[in-house]
Image: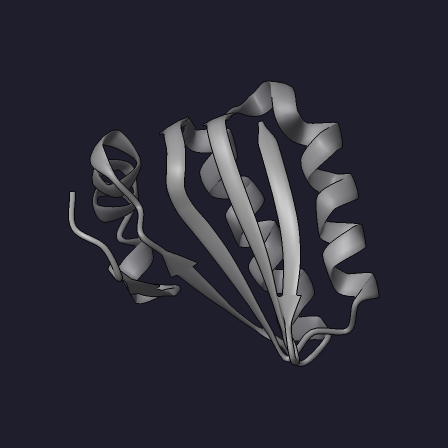
Length: 105
């Protein structure tokens, strides 16, 4: 997993790229801590450049959502593509997260 963080007002934007798998547990936990330290009102997770996510990656997003809610922040998933979009759809993450498509495939 590679990531980049930017801030736009009370929104913290994290761009994830490459793969989000069980091997990324430690890195993702540190990322969540960094995001929550910024005390965001919203966390926008841009998935446009994420090529693959396994079930552990889904769990990581759930952990992020739980931490965000505990800090009174919301999580928005943006531009999932290909396999990542299919994985989110199969897991019915649209019932747990607000997911938006700002760009087309």
